[in-house]
Length: 156
Image 1: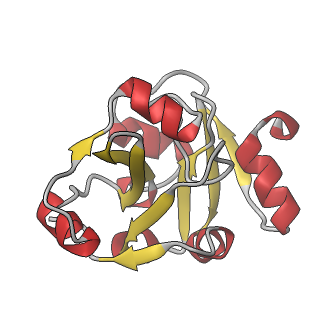
Image 2: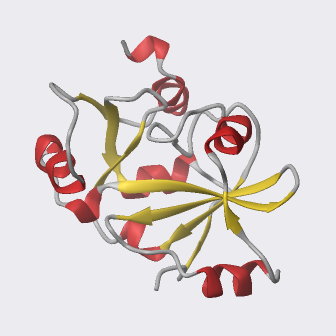
């Protein structure tokens, strides 16, 4: 299965170790998803896409249930307005559907910001671009894989 997952292909090319986790059944909650992966909710990294302007997007990585502060985000970006991208916009910006978005293996470049909470745990999990499958890896390896990532305090 790893051969057909863009994220796994990207990590393989970079020589970064990871584990694929395939859900035995769909999780009904964030907590259940963490338990199925053998992790805490703080180890699950969400990839959230925001719309800055027509056709212009950014991705923000946030650990666990943490909430993104639009005030902090606007200040970091030096802009007055920001909104969540729609499902159609997420697909257009990343090539992935909501629920499977990941910062790796993107179909086109997108600016990626990560809340500092993403790197508080040694092991984390991210989306794989395939629903029902997650990628488990070391947080520092994600930072290496994302080379141009901008790390800051973007949470509430």
